[in-house]
Length: 208
Image (cartoon, rainbow, N blue to C red):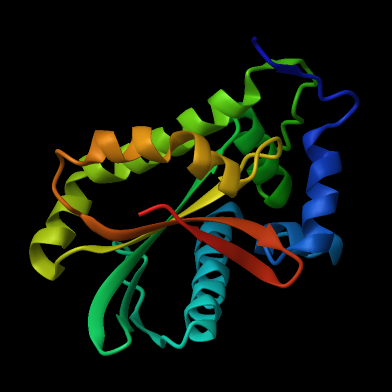
């Protein structure tokens, strides 16, 4: 039976206020303290925040992470334990207009485009497809293939900005489908994690 979820009266602005009070996503926190950022500065700051959270996540399991450089690409050259590696950070959003609303609201040099309230049919499937397409795009990207050839497989961190479904649910519902798509591709990434915002940073969930 098809599931239809209604998001009554909730706009991107409403959710943005929740995020800025419960996470370390830099652009949302900047809104809380009245210190917006230039659009070009948002992504590097966001990536640094995610890398710091990933470092803490690995350290909690007894593994160290040291950022050696931020060349872009990749987003970071690192050592994980005693091994050299590299990390790429990307984000998947429930929909393109959701992404545009959040990011435009965070930058002081862009006009905010509010999210239009509407009924979303099959939101879980929409979110899973967004995650899958973001991952496949990285596997197809020429620069990622070049990094794999030069340094070996890296680590992909994918932000799940999907307010109607959690990363755990996405992995449960679409892990097999995603892995079946990448199994025939070059093994560009040794590990893939989905992450979400939390009150003290980000929480990570292993997909690969």
